[in-house]
Amino acid sequence: MTEPFDPSLARFPTRVVPLDLVIDLLHVSHAPDLVLSYRKEMEQGVQFPPISVVAVLGRYVVADGHRRFSAARGLPIDEVVVEVWPFAQLAADLLAQTRATLREWRRAVVALLTRGSARELGDVLRATAAHWWRIVRSLLTLHCRRVS
Image (cartoon, rainbow, N blue to C red; front, side, top):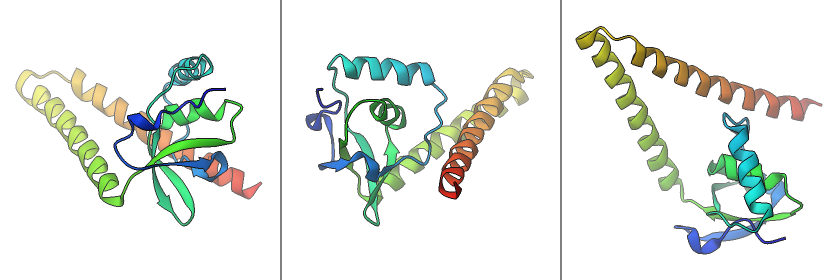
């Protein structure tokens, strides 16, 4: 099987690591059809950018590429190419995501106050609730695996 991740598409240093050393804290996907589509492409030899990870105590925690990683976990592979982010990149990425979310909330509130339109606010509220529910489900399933 062709390696599903192409190191030449990485922006940071890459490593080949055992799949078992990669931890995805956000493994519950909101797009299972996309994960399946990625897996099928990987099985056909299509290569994707490596998933981005942060090295923590000999493990690699997924920072970006959760769907690509989920797709790769379904393949008959034991190792995976990862892009290792420095903590500064993780912080920058989280800050950018937070700013984008705050802009969405601001637009929705402005739409409500200026046009009386609650639709945007409802959309943002539903998306935010779905995101946090996905986080809770991911963490609960990780905890349940450890307990059993």
